[in-house]
Length: 337
Image (cartoon, rainbow, N blue to C red; front, side):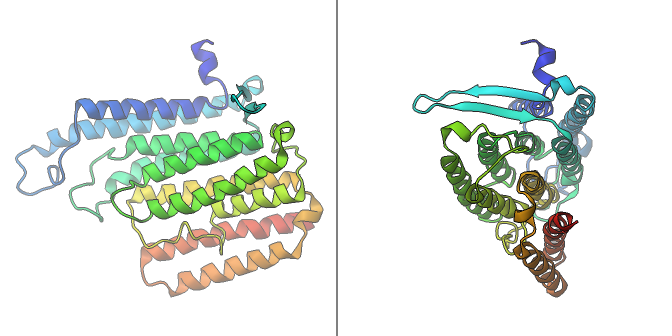
């Protein structure tokens, strides 16, 4: 496989982000970050310009990597012959299948939004010094943010159920790693534990499909009502739709870039899955009155909590959940049209 073919496929932008994050991580082994307070501490013996040089270069490099991935994604939109990638998966004990990634219009739109949010997280993350004064140097979480963006791209380009299930686990790992586990029980512990429970729903869906049907594409289907229900449940939890928002509403705090990752990139992948499932669910499934009841409950519940919240950070969390809840009503209204 040539270098060009390695990147001109649906996983090309994700590969660029992953390699960029790896280079940044290796650079930290050679030149360490400044110690806490070394940049902004009033009694520091290190020149601020000199102390900030290497972290600033890492931040600029990470930003350039994300923008390069975005340019490649825009170029792939006009190359339909590179819009699919299949990788054979053959374990030792079962029949196996094929991992499929596709770059159709819906997947491409979700990928563009993820890359834009990744760029935003890289830019704003260096300006948040609320949690630990002296720790806000440029590019402090750049490689973790890039890896999270790569995992999210792999997930939203998934073409069949087995690929979605694998991408789900990969995204959980990258999200938890970006939220810096070990520095506090929240929000990394909550996100990891609760989202990992929903991976059991993905496993159950795979078991119900059986070996012959794991290659069924998400865009075509068909799925049995039970499998469809499990996939919808997983998508609603990932999107953070109230009252399935429990992994987003923990008491912990994180940096500004982490808040974008947790409350925007994570739920965006769930909204992508909701939209994909809406294509194969059928009118009878989407016209059920339970969707209208869930959407109304989500809008009312999140609006009331956001109105009553006194903390600005907590209030914006509920506002984000309120916006995600609109998707449920939108899907229901489209089905009625």
